[in-house]
Image (tube, rainbow, N blue to C red):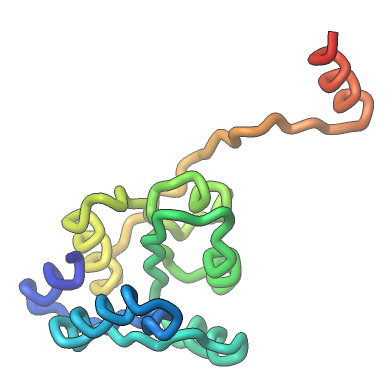
Length: 155
């Protein structure tokens, strides 16, 4: 939906996705539908590590809209290049990119906002909002503190 907005606004872009539907028929149907509607979107499928990193190096920005992740490995890999990332504002993204300064988070249910951020990135005007993320687990500095916490919960 965000890419359709970019097209309506006449923006020149190319979005590369590492899915192609070869693993699941339902995804293959979606890929077929969107390939026809959005020729700027290329469905690359699974890439070997070398090819993936070649694409990372050529990319101007990463868009990471995943709704379900435990840890965003591509986010960690891409952030090492110090390039902009537009990421769904979900805990995995905040955790994977904790401390990274070239990230813009977006509501994954709002394609208009994603399109606006993509437009800014295309124009080289993306503002970042790394902010702070309070980790959902407790940080313990040493074994003594760890044992005290564990034993205090037993009593």
